[in-house]
Amino acid sequence: MLSTVLDNEAGGRRLARHDRGVHSIRQSFEGNGLFLRRRDLLALGHTDGQIRAAMRRGIVIRARQGWYALATASTAAVQAVRVGGRLTGLSALKTYGHWTPTTKSLHVVVPAKARALRTPHDMRKRRAATRVRGCRVTWHDSDELRAAPTQWRDSVVDALAHVLRTADRVTAIVCLDAALHARQEGLEGITRKQLDELFATAPRRVQTWKRLVDGRAEAGGETEFRLLCADAGIPFLPQAFIPGVGDTDGQIGPHTYVEVDGSETHDTPEGIANDARRSAAAAAKGARLLRFRYRQYQQQWSSCVAAMYQALEEDEALVKTPVVRYESPRWARFERRNARMLRQLRTKRTALARGRGR
Image (cartoon, rainbow, N blue to C red; front, side):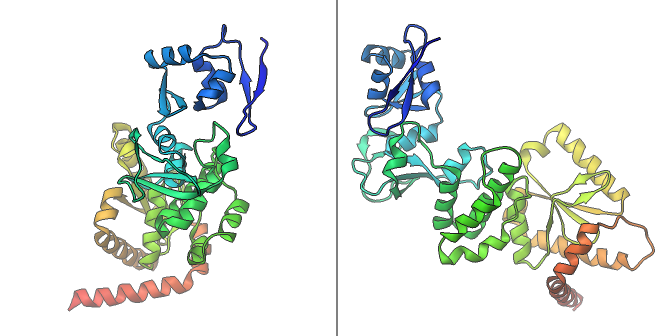
């Protein structure tokens, strides 16, 4: 099948041009990106009549004056183009399949000299200079990157740089953890070298966050829980292994492990049965597996800390008994590296125990 290429006048991007008698408008979009301008479609051999017909059939929608998209394009992507920019930050990272903290805002980046911005839900309504509810716009995009018609979202690296500039500590570290883990799973993410480069250009206020980025967590909730544990003085070893159980979300004591459960996979009959099997297998190895739900640690953190403190006291007491239990070699190394934190934790638990005894 013959095809030719045609230069895009604005961005220098070369678009595949297909024989319109063989390929539909849908296929033109699929071959050249989610979003195309009217002039791109005309250059590909389509007519205004064909564009209107595709819109009537629900194949194509108009995202903004002169910009079109497949009707199957994500709502967030369409809204970003409608505003006049591209997805960035949390909104962009979500489109790459990364675990991101929940946000009600659409994060959009536009050129520094952008004009005639629209609201996310109405391309006819101009966006006021003040912040529109549910849409956070940043003015620092590159005209060169934005020129290509398929560039409807920031790269993973640029989206993470935006997060480091604008987000809080937990949100930023969760996103960085997720990006590192995505790369390990074969998805689009970042390498350790790219992590170093991100922090090399990040604001001074975030530099101490780098040592907290780990990349082993399989879900953002695990990273959130690990950071909360660190703030409470509880050492947390991610992805700790127990024979017969497999990897757990973390280990906080010699024989005390933690699982952070979300509803998506743990509330199904299969998930409930698997959790019960893993808990029983852990107990058979002399390990205690504490389970916390996302909503529980987010809304009742003090009760989670109390449960972990009590479990750690019992764990240390049992260490002195002759009972045979599984001894994690990774924990022994982790314990040596975090000896000071563990001493401080013991002091804190002792003080709390004395307070309860009064």
